[in-house]
Amino acid sequence: MKNTYFTPGPAQLYPSVARHVQTALDEQIGSLSHRSQGFRRIYQHTADQLREMLRIPDGSGIFFLGSATEVWERVLQNCVERESFHLVNGSFSGRFHAFARELGKHATQVEAPFGEGFNAGDAPVPETAELVCLTHNETSSGVSMPVAEMHALRSAHPGRLFVVDAVSSAPYPDLDLKLIDSVFFSVQKAFGLPAGLGVWIANERMLAKAEQLAAKGISIGTYHSLPSLFKNFRNYETPETPNVMNIYLLGKVAEEMNRQGIGAIRRETEAKAQRLYDFLDRSASFDVFVRNPAHRSQTVIVGSVAPRQSSQPKTATQVIEALKAAGIVVGGGYGSYRNQHIRIANFPATSTEEVERLVRELGKV
Image (cartoon, rainbow, N blue to C red; front, top):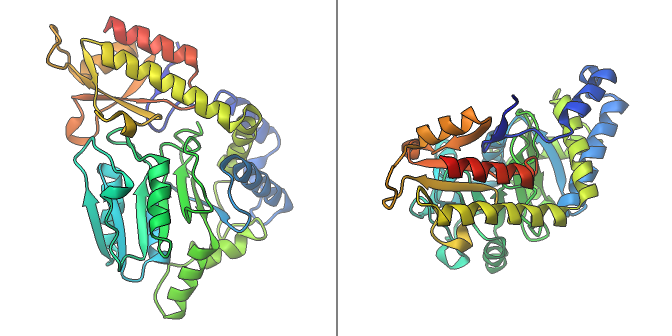
């Protein structure tokens, strides 16, 4: 029996991935030089599909890196001379802030309790901050910052650069990339691909900042600096040999998503999330961890296990093992919440029917 993965990354593979992998093997995609015309066509196709899906402005670059974790470092190296500002409400937004400190930046933050989110009014951006770092979807806690609040915060601070971590939510959030300067994500989550590829989208304001720092003699990195990435991108090339296979697969999956329509994908995501939240709300054995409905993630649903009203409390480990026996894999809680939470990925690769089956099995537990 094959498992169905509701894990928040690596996650369930998109249904057509196996077919595309076979085509890539048949066409020897894995042996293409990254300086070949064949690779340039793959890069351009993937970039064009992402540009259509996410409404990426023409001047923005679309870059392929090793991971989204790498993007944290590249963003900070290229766009912060002295100070960044971070909204922190979980483990991953906290790590972004920690990266800035480790790179020697003066990194300030506003921190919300685990399980709580932010609105625009909760973020007093310092006058001295050059870069504002937002996390759309905190994978560890299931908290999401509403897109409208991110847009409002950006509009209130037009002179700053704004970057959004959309690692476990893209392509769901309808970000206005004429407002937001940069966004990044990983492909092993909502795009349903094997791990090993980060996607970084950055506009020309980000490039100008990097060039300004370099002109001052400040290190902005080497082969993955924004000037290097932009220079190569204009020819649909990369500075180094990239993950050609995953770039190819991303282009194919993004093309299929565009045929379905990003609007339809977003509506289906919301309907599946509502089904899961309704179940957790009504259950005697589970509860929704994120109390404020406005801050509940649509792509990573976190349930508390064994609330007080349960007559037969179970641990998260027991729930996860019971689901595994039925061929369903969900994520455990993050960090100290490991045995208190289950995390359920609600990505496009899992269908409405599979979500209904998950709900039935949770009901049995």
